[in-house]
Image (cartoon, rainbow, N blue to C red):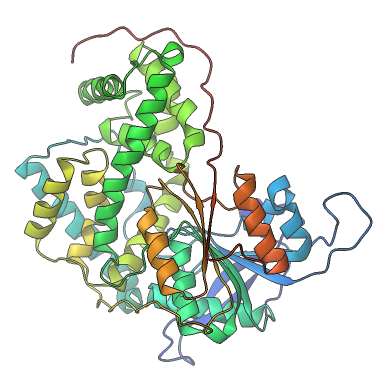
Length: 487
C-alpha cells in the first residue's frame, strides 16, 4: 500500500493533496534485491456534483497519470481537479500522480554537475561546421561517460519496460484490481507497454498525443520524424505571426517572419541578450511555440520587442534559471537514460551526420538541436534493449481511447494512427488542423466531451471520431513595427 500523509514543503502542493511512496525493485529480475522508492501524490475524489446539484457522484477508483518526458514528474497532476475542465472527472476519481523512477526524489538520476548544466549563451549554427560537430560529439561522449560513472550498474534499469512494471506495482499499492490510466506524450508509450504486458489489468486507458510505438521507430527514427514535424509547426507559427503583422511588425508573410527570426539569431550571435541569451536559447524559447499555440502571442511579442531594441521580454522567456538547474539536469538525465537504454541507436557518427544533414535541408529549425540532445545515445555505456512489439488482439483489452492533434509536432500524428492500428478495439479521436501537444483537458470542448464520456461512462464514439480545432490564440498588445534592417 501507499501510506499517504502531508506532502514535503518543497513540493509546494496544497493541503488537499497527500503524498506517499511506493517501493519497487530496481531490477525486476531480482525482485527481492535492492528496492527504490517512487513518490506518489493523490487528491481524493470530491464526490461533488460539478453542476451544483445535491447528488453524490459515485467514486470510480484512482486515475493514474504519467505526463511524459521521459523525465517529467506527475506529482502536480492532482491539482488539476480544481480546473473547470477536470471537475467532473475529479468528482469520480482519485487523481493520482507520481514521479517515475529517476525523477525528482524517486531514486534520482544525475549525469553531470547541475551547476555546469546551464552554460548560456551558446551558439546554434544552422549549418554546423565539421569542427563544431566534433566539439558537440566530444560533449556527448563526456555526458554519456558521466551518466555511467554517477549511476554505475543501476543505470541499465532506468528504461520503459521497468516504468511499465512500476506502474503495475503502483496499481496494486493503490488497491486497484484494474488500472485506469491517462498517459500523455511519452506516457502513452508506457501505457502501450503496460497494455501489452498486463492486458488483464487494464480497466480504462487514455493515450493523449501518442508516441509511435513501432519497434523500428524507438527512438532514433521517432526523433527524425519529430524534427520534420516541428518544421511544419514552425511554419504554422510564422503564418500566424504574419497574419498579425499589424500587431507585431515582423512581416506580413511567413518568409518575412523567418527573416526577422534570422536577424535576431544573427544579432544574438554577435551580442547575447542580457549576457545570457544566445542563438541556442532563442531557438529553445521559440520551440515552445511549436508545442503549444497559447505560447504564440508571448513568443511573437518577445521577438518583436527584441528587434526594436527591448531585449527584456526575450531574456525573461529564454534565459536559463540557475535555481532550476538541478531539476533540468535531472530531467535530461532521465530522458537520456530511458531512451538510450530502450533500443539500439546508431553508434557511428557518420550515420547521424548523413541522416540529419539531409533532413536539415528541409527542416532546419529543430534538426540539429534534436541531434545534440540525443547524441549521448551514440556513446552510451549501458546495454541496449530490444523494444517490445506493442499490440493487442481483438478482445484482449477493454476499449481504449487515443487522443491526437493532427499537426502535433512533438508526437507526430502518424504515431496515433500506428498505436490505434496496433491496439484492436481502440478509438481514435482527432482534433483536426490543430497542433497543440496534449489535448486532454485542454481548450477543445469536443475532445473533453469524449474524454469525460469514456472515463465516466466507458463510452467511446465508434472506431474513429474527429473534432473541429480549438480557436487559435488572438494576438497580444499592439507593438511598434520593427524596422527592416540587414544582417
